[in-house]
Length: 309
Image (cartoon, rainbow, N blue to C red):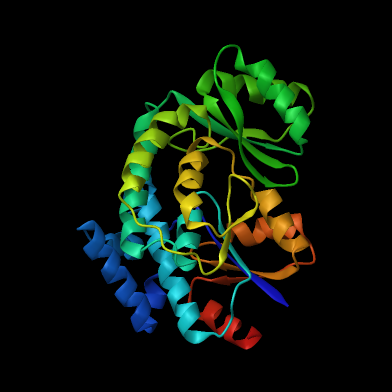
């Protein structure tokens, strides 16, 4: 039985995340304290109490989910002998995976993703970019739809989440045209997403360049576990490639579907989602019905995990 640890990305945040673990496990409480110290403000209070409006701001969301995920991961490590063959994360979650793999220092990761969130928000003025989910469409058909919709603007696949669930991103006009074309072709479930910026498309290039500058000053340590990267959907154990993959990730689609398929092909049977929400566990089930999924975000999740082990 082989395990993979997977870490959620933006959209999984909610007020109250991490609070139960912090109240019940000293190591989780200390992790949130470490996050507060690293960032110079009470991120823990925002995670535990909200308000939701503050948590939704990308520059807050990214470090908040990272902190909740790493706190949960540290509890898992303390309470369970379970080891992972691979780790992976969805977009922002790749930073949590890299902390778990020993590549990034927790405080460095927090400061980096706070900057990353600001850069991604600043890259495109609010109202200029958009994202949309298009369900039931094949990759090649979606590529045609995006090509037809572009008309000199940017629109491209941003997240390959699971079979038939693809998210596109780009200029508002182009994304709107893509939704209309998809519906005209019979893909009724094409809808805009409530996001603040068009992530994982060419419009994010300014953010990628600024992120590269921040990552230059960050030390990457040897990886103790292979990280299946969003950009390649393949495992990386080379510390020298980590920064490049993180910079490329900003403008590249998240290849989650392929990443999960790769891990299944390597013999992974159990996927443990570590951090807030159960979004990734749901995607894994769509990709591989036989896979077992567990979620570690509260005391019940930790108990369930120790029983498995």
